[in-house]
Image 1 (cartoon, rainbow, N blue to C red):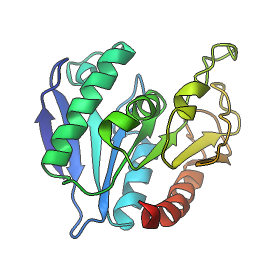
Image 2 (image 1 turned 45 degrees about the horizontal axis):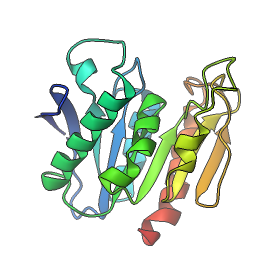
Image 3 (image 1 turned 90 degrees about the horizontal axis):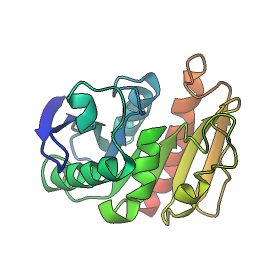
Length: 202
């Protein structure tokens, strides 16, 4: 693993790059709003991806690198993410097929920027469809705007809601809530199965 500091329009970010010999592509994952790249579901997805032949980068947004827990505004997160992915693709990850993704807030960023980053697929862990108790404030359009194959792994009791499936979007429901704390075993098989189906297509 190599930790790289990358410049963005909103300060330095950090990418933890896990290379794979003869990689067939790359997976770039972002963290949740108040969490970090050590989240167990991110680590599980990264492990499965490497087993499938993907190089992996776990990305810390600039606000986390600066030591802040409160997330930056969406437009700043998106701009930083686009800059990060561009540098990773020009450097250690190469220009092969890219899967973008993340958990919670990181999943939203990956969806909103999928076209700008050239993502061939999107992986969402615990996509926050709406704030708890506010289903009328839906973020489903962020998922619907993704025009490439997507996977959402969602806890069946997630207070942030349940996303709808779509033509190119698979939703796998696992036991648990937003954090998957007790149900992590459901995440890895869901990601592994999806990767086995989507990698030959991208």
